[in-house]
Length: 186
Image 1: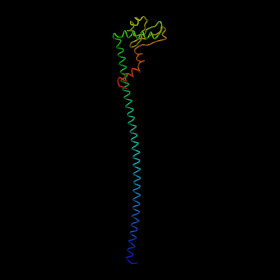
Image 2: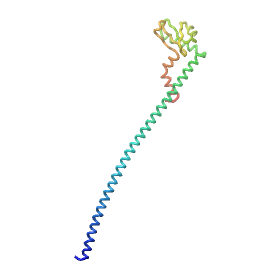
Image 3: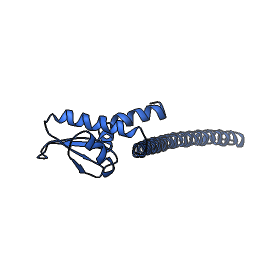
């Protein structure tokens, strides 16, 4: 074997070894790329899951805030309606100072006596309304009320109340509903 042959053999072996090293390096590079791609996919997946969790939490917060806002609006509307009913009650008390009150008192007292259905009755009313009640021909007793009257049997076992407070209480839900409609349209 001559030097030339030895040189060719060394070159051939070197090329072979270089090819093997290159193939291993490419294989290793491919594994690194695959591993990096898997890691990227994993990170993207985790980010997506975290993003979805953050989005769901944000959606829950927004929903909760909307619910609190609706509750606050509802409470504010209720407060306005209560104020309207309080104003109505005040207007009824002021009605007792007008000339329209005596006929209204007579209607309320007579309706209470009629509903009572007894032959004899006692009218309970404000001290200020005692003279109006006596004109109806019934004995009277003083009570604390804003206006109107209560008719009761002589023994006091049955009572029919037509006081302003009772009438407001009986009509409270209807008055609230109408106030909501008038004020808020719903």
